Image (cartoon, rainbow, N blue to C red; front, side, top):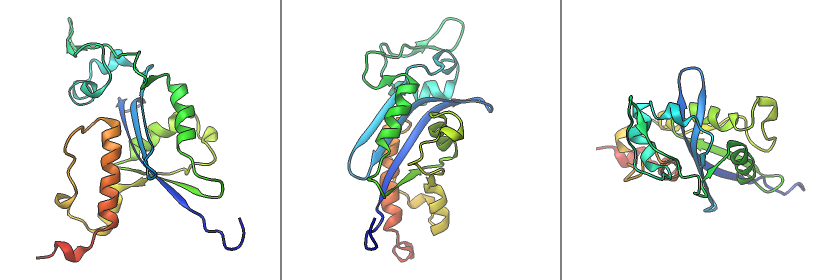
Length: 196
């Protein structure tokens, strides 16, 4: 870049759904929205589905949004019975997702990528685990994600004023889209607009 070239930041908002047990975090799905309008969504074909089936919260809030062959129903012996539709173009091996996400999260040479998530600590770990240990982290990606909730606190925003997500909560792509909505709202936030 010449002396008058300005670095451009390409922003991405993302969300993941995952299974965690206090020790391991396994990807279920990921949704990413770029400021240029591109979107990415994938479901991990090799997620630990037999364990997900015994996680009541995931079965209630996440599984119904996944591409399924059949509606979830109670299984004999407990848990839920469901079959992820592997014919769906969204369902892919995690290794494939890793390559596609690394390529999707791109910026022109000399520019930078900026990542945003909501309560993103776990999302950041799940995202980065796609590529294995830290030493394998794609060089063009930042080693951190910006957190929308941290921005809410920094600005002193009353969370009751934040835009509400109308539908699709816990569908990774719908959540990523809403993360962008919240970021834009926070970008334009003026405290004087909310004083009596």
